[in-house]
Amino acid sequence: MDLCSGTQSPVFGALMMGLVRQCQTIHGREKICMPPQLPPEWASTLFFIIMGIISLSITCALLVLSRWHQETTKYARWIAFTGMVFFCMAALIFPTGFYINEVGGQPYKLPNNTVVGSSYVLFVLAIFFTIVGLLFAGKVCLPG
Image (cartoon, rainbow, N blue to C red; front, top):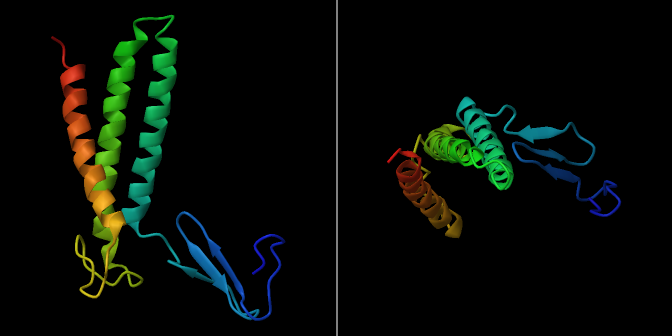
């Protein structure tokens, strides 16, 4: 596939990669998409990630608004806390989808022949910092 013009080469076929699916057309055959349907665990993970992004976006808007309306800071803290809970839920639910055929593992366990790189380290660090962030957010949100 020519990346600039979007035309399909008769030799290479076409590969389309998206956030939740990967589709490929080889030599004019029928398009194959993997996974054909997003597993419910990963669909709920996507939902929690989107809700977390929305929560943090609202938090940023409220923090900007707090320059003129001081009381919005209280709401921004709680919405940020909610966003962090959404991200924690996504991090906990995502590995349960490793059972699908394309991955070939079990919930929370990748196959033995799988080699993980720096992305796994970043995933673990993201969970760690999310939990630390929740602790700080809980300390900030509690009255006192």
